[in-house]
Image (cartoon, rainbow over all chains, first blue to last red; front, top):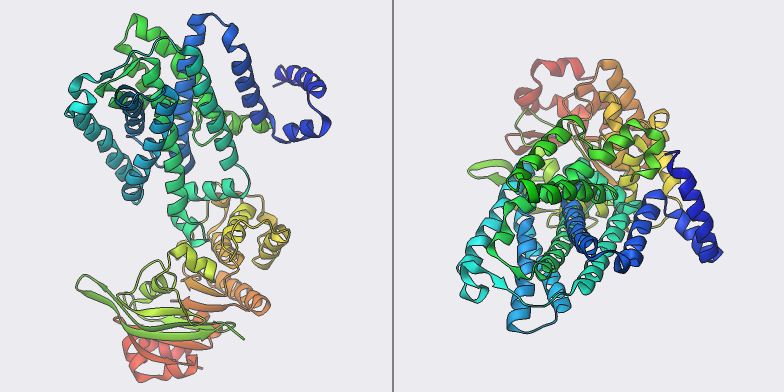
Length: 334
Length: 249
C-alpha cells in the first residue's frame, strides 16, 4: 500500500484543480475502492479511442466479462445463492439482440436494451420459483435452465434452429465499447451502493443467516428476488453486447462453461465485494486469451484447477484474503 | 391503551397429524404467559404460528384486533411480534453491535429509516442485555449464554411489543439460569414488553410468568396462575409428575 499512496496523493492534488472543493469532498468520502474503480472506468472511457485496435477490441471483451462477473456477484456474492445456470441470461440476451436485429431491424443499442429487459424478466420468472430453494437445491434448479434453453433455441426455426442467428452489422467497435462501458459503470455503481449503509448491512445479515434475517424484519424473499432480477438484467444486456461483438448468437451461448467462468471470476476475486469481480475478470481473462490460442481445451482445466486452489487455500478470494491478513489494507479493498 | 396479542381457535395439521387442536390464548403488553407441556405437545408449533413462521390450518392470530397470521414473517416482526430461536441464530460474521443494529434498522414499523436515535437505541439494548463489553466481538466468538442474550437483545431491538421466547433458558447452568432470569425481569420492567415463554426449566417459567398455559398433545389442558396450574391434577398427571411436589410453593 505504501507504494500506491504517493500516486493517490498526486492524483488527489490533480483532482483538486479539476473539481470544485465541495465535489472533491464527496469524492473523498467514497473511499479508496470506489475512487480506484472510478478512476479505472474514467481512464477506460478517455484512453479507449487512442489505443491500438487490437487492445481496444480486447478491452471490449474484458468489460463484457467484468459485467458478467459483477452480475453473478449481485446474486451469488451478495446472498450466497450459487447461480449455476447464470449463462441462461447471457444466451437469452444474445438471442434477444439477434432476433431484434435480424427480424425487426432494430438498432443494436435497442437490442442490448431488449436483452437486458428479457434477462430481468427471465430472472423474475426463474427466481420466483427457485429462490425458495436453499443451497445446492437452488444451484441444481438453476443449472437446468440453460440446458432447457439450449434445446428450445436449437429446435426453434425462428431462432435459426441449431445454427443460430449470424448477423452482419459491420465493425461497430466504438459503439460496442461505450455501450458495455456504460453497463459496467452502472453495475459497479449499483454494487457499491448495495454494499453500503443500511441496505448493505441487511444484505450481509441475509447472507449470514436467512432465517434470522427474516426474524429481525428483513424482507428476505423480496431482497433476493430484486438482486436476482438486477443480476439477470445485467447478464442479459452484456450477453447482447457479446452477440453484437461476435456478430452472431448460437446455441452454444448457453454453454455451462460460461457459468463456470463467471463463478470463477468472483470466487477468485472475492465474493460479495465491490472490487473482487473486477480483479477476477482480469485474472480469468488473461489466461483465457493465452490458452485460447495455444491450448483451447486447456481453459476449463485451468479454471477448474485455479478455483479449487483458491477455494482450498484462499476461501475469501483475493479481496477477502487481503482483508483478513492485512487489516491495515482493509479500507482499500471493499 | 395496552396492546394485546391473541390467538383464537388455532388448529395446525401436518398431513394426518394434528399438532395444535383448537388452542386459544391472549396476553396484554407487560405480562408474561408461560407455555409448558411435554415434548411434542405443540409448544414450538404454537410459537411458530404466533410469529408468522407457520400458517395455522384454521383459527387466527390477532395483534390489537388486527389479523396477523396471514402476513409474511418479516411483516409480523415489523408489526411488533418477534421470536427468539431455541438454538440462537446470531449473524456470526457480524459484530454484536451490528447484529443489534440490523434488528433495530429493519425490525421497526418504518424500516431503513434514517433515525438519529438508532445508535442510541442500539447502545441501550447492549446495556440492557449486558453485552456492552462484547459490542465489537464477532457474534461467532460469543459463549452460549452470550449468544442467547444477543438473541434476546436482537428481538428487543426490533421494537417488538411482544416477544416469543423459545426455551431461552435451556442448556444453561443453574447459575446462568438465575442470572438470565434476573436480566429478563430487569429488562421487562424497563421496556414493558409482553412475552410468551416456552420453557422446560420449571423454576424459571414459574417465577417469570403471571399466567401459564399447559399443552398436551396439541390441546390446552389447563390455564391459570402458576400456583393454580401446578396444583391441577390433570397437569400433574400429564406433565409434572413427581416434580410438582418440588416446585409447588
